[in-house]
Length: 148
Image 1 (spheres, rainbow, N blue to C red):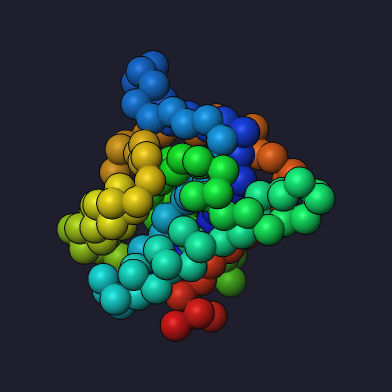
Image 2 (cartoon, rainbow, N blue to C red):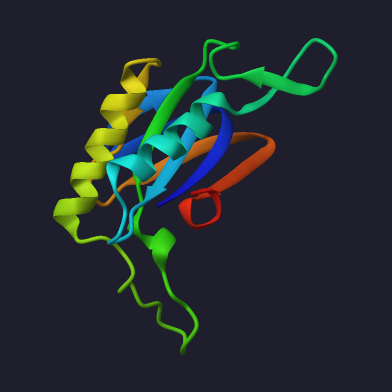
């Protein structure tokens, strides 16, 4: 499982010319799910995500968490995070989770995060347009292969 976390001033997701998810200050999280991912792996990444202290405090140090700044989450499924570009110029997506498993875990992540924070979402499997103003820029990649 991979989370690409971008600290944003604002972000939104549009599907078929309709904004379906929109946040102010917080995290835009692109979520990639592999075939061997589980709820236990998701729980570890969620805990790390929600505990990240990457917002500046009064001294300009990255010391505040999402909770400390009343932040929001925009969670977007993105299977292309598991693109394999080792051979040729056309990415392979054989490492991605099957759509049923991936959607189940994506919905699980949304549900778990909503117990603690305001959450907006993309639409699983849809052609989405994502807009954001990256604050920093500040982008962090959480990869379960490195954390679990």
